[in-house]
Length: 139
Image (cartoon, rainbow, N blue to C red; front, side, top):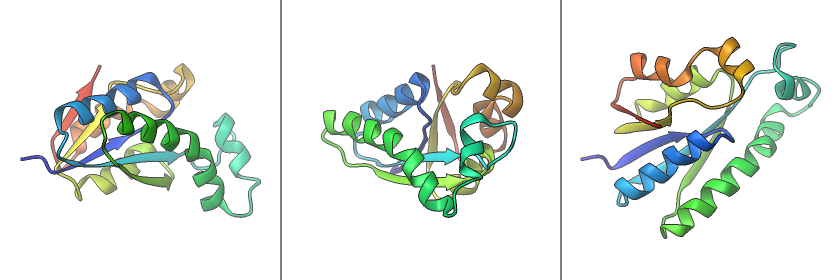
């Protein structure tokens, strides 16, 4: 039985669909939405601004606020409360580091921009290959 689900989310429609899938198919499960803010680097547009922040954790939480607000609105439609967690770093590493604390990961088939996919690779594909728990990929 799946009682704890990790749903990694960015601001993409695919990640929103992953959350909806988790809510519809695992209504009794404890759902945690994870948003990963990329580490500052010259190659990452939005994350570059984080490099100028004095408090990276606060800046990451502020960056995640809109994703979490949208996730909470979706969860409220199903009368479910969700947990939220923000991490700073590589999305794949952050997801895999958290995955072992859950029974399953529900992830969108892809997200982010085309440039993100070119530089990062396919996050969902890597998570499927390396996850210590079952992964449900939503399209």
